[in-house]
Image (cartoon, rainbow, N blue to C red; front, side):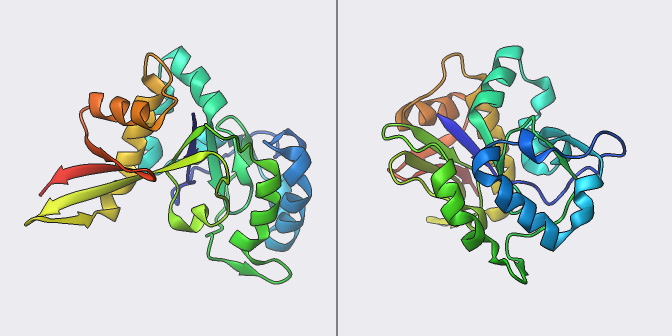
Length: 223
């Protein structure tokens, strides 16, 4: 199992610390040149800005609900191994990768770079592990999903819905909290879930009403 998280709009700005080292980030060999070129066009001063672990920089609702600092030691080890964070600037980073504060929406188009999803797609296809039989739990929004999708692994999107007068309505404002809660439950599970059914069982054991489809884990709330 792997868990893919989005970045967050809310970010903490490191006030001290050494700047980012591109060679230390996840997939440095495959993505380093793409990152360097993008930073040169977007904001070269980022290479001199103080950096902190991605888990500390991203502070939005999903990360608040995930609450990494309060996880057990085994869960933190699992998170370090299994969680990747999508980013319009970095492609993917690990929770412990040190990055500076930045703001770069995935919809941004930069001169000489173009649409960011297209900028990253080929490089991520070459860099990201993609094995048949692996379950990838996807917490990303559509803009980040456009950057990379596996061809062999099974991608399971986590979605949130509310039942209203017999209709099922997507609730985007709750999706981030739900995804943070589900990610936390998966990391805390006594045994790491590996199949779609095991992922769904962990979410159900955490108190959610869930429905499993071949492509999604739907969390259902009553109106």
